[in-house]
Length: 203
Image 1: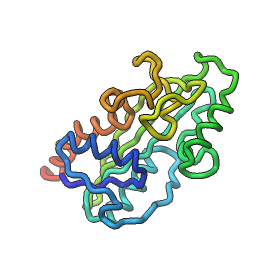
Image 2 (image 1 turned 90 degrees about the vertical axis):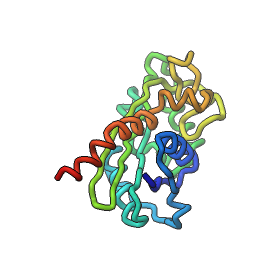
Image 3 (image 1 turned 60 degrees about the vertical axis):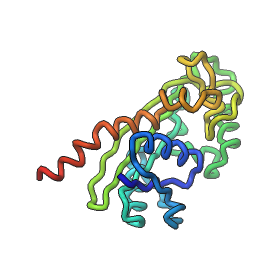
Image 4 (image 1 turned 45 degrees about the vertical axis):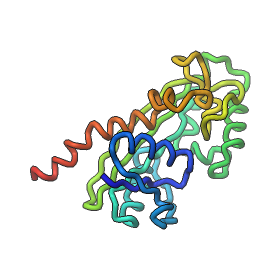
């Protein structure tokens, strides 16, 4: 299937493209298709925002479109930053300021009180108006300092116990794909895709 990836985030695009192409799809970015639209993410959940983005970019591109809305939920902060993950500091996409604010808000807390999870909702929206949304989660904890350079967003301060408490930004691409919230959501999407597409044919 030829799919439009609805994101302007280079790091997210790279991950979406790598996973979707490994599943056998052809991926076009919205930039490659000349689409500069940035839909307002007015949803209160990751699922709502993924649907908003996928629908808008599908209508602009005419292609089946995959959009991801993902973020970080920290238990000690009652699920913050949540849907405000990318603009936690008050500015959209300022990774350094977002990390600084999160570390400051958790200052003084020991490891056992720094549990968190990355969450991803992935929506496939088809030109006929049907959509399929799946969710993936990756549990971990927030570190005390930045570590690693292989990642973006909160990756340098998000640590994973199953990889000896290394940060997301210290993992190899293969290690990250095996456990990532986005990878899990996309794998579930692929599992459901054939039945979802067949469903129309039987109606």
